[in-house]
Image 1 (spheres, one colour):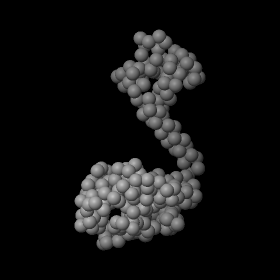
Image 2 (cartoon, rainbow, N blue to C red):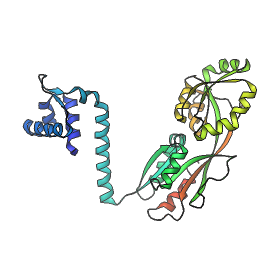
Image 3 (tube, rainbow, N blue to C red):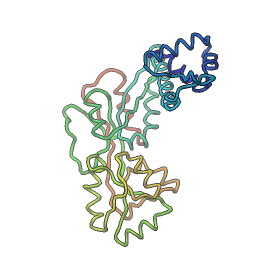
Image 4 (cartoon, one colour):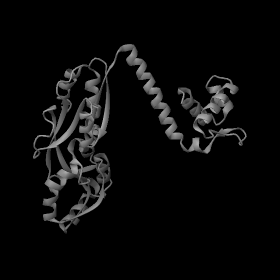
Amino acid sequence: MKFDWLEDLIAILDTGSIVEAAHSRNISQSAFSRRIQAAENILGIELINRKAKPNKPSDVVQNYSNELRQLAYMQTHIIKQLKVEGREGAKHIVIAAQHAITTSLGSSLVKRIANIDKTHVRLRSGNRDECEALLLTAQASITLTYRAHLETGRQNNMLTEEIVVADDTFIPVFDRSKVDDLLWRFHNGRLDIVAYPADVFLGIEFNRQVLPTLENMCRVNTVAETALSPAVLQLASAGIGAAWVPRALAQNEIENGNLADLSQYFETVNLKIIATRLRDRSGLNEDEIWRALTLIGN
């Protein structure tokens, strides 16, 4: 598919007709129509409803309006970035981070690294196992992941090196306006929680270090479950159930008074944020970036 075709479709969506779309794209109506017909032949679908007077985007184009706009934006951004890097020789680095780390520290991370000799940072977010897989397959240069204080060293330590970036704590939080009701139910033998799947890192640590104590105190009722810690935070903020999240992720909401920190009532877990890279990496300005990572939690 040619680069122009996405922009052509956006023009049709914006203007609602071929005539106006051609005008906005600064080409003749006949040339614009030929370009749309060529796209239709390639895709095997109608992009224009020619039965309507005036012609308008087909139903399928209108149904995928948001997705097409996102693709057009991404295409423009990528082309612009390619030109910049080709002209200026800009460097780039891919960092894979757990979802909570991306959300809580992503902005400070990018700010510190982007200042290093015009470095372009690409953040990829995933579960811990996904981040580690990206590193070992060279799809990421560095990972940022959590480690609980009871964990031993990770596997593949002969292949990788690591540094401690920051300390964090896995804390229980809940909608501040509904805390009294939650604690009343807890003292009467029941606690509603938002949980993580048992096979993801935060779920493993919750089940190992928090859940046994809770079950000795009350009946634990799992209301909802998700692997995404930002989603867990939102569910706790909505009063769905108490939830355990990294403090760095919840800190702003706690300070704003929207969330209550329930650490005085329930178990917490000490965490460390670990940066990991493959040993003997060379090229780019990775050593300088590696040193900068030690400051992102400050």
